[in-house]
Length: 179
Image (cartoon, rainbow, N blue to C red):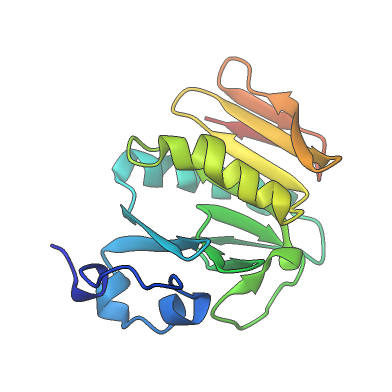
């Protein structure tokens, strides 16, 4: 089903974060709506395998979280300019905050689980915009592998890769993820 908000012609100056946050909930319930540089990125909500993998990540990370952090799936993160993204999972350094959109500075780690409809976005676009936003860690989870990246000199460098279905993290905290 295509919603009216997405049938509107592009705006001459592009969409704004406030425009996206003001969309009625019934227009965004069935689709993930993100914004990069004034352009809407609309993708279907993840399927069952994606959700199962997200659950595994949450169960592995929750007990390892350090004090002063919080894990949340699928929340709005406002980046600089007209950018609003919805990572599959974030670890925040601002627990308990009540907001429509967290600031990039609140995010310690952003995680994306690659889906068929989001491959390019997750592997290239999201990695680039998270790095520009100075989010310290980026976790990219593929169907059969995972890589943790750490921000160094404005770009992400891989610091941990899964082996035999397990990813061992030592930073930003210790945890073992079984895929």
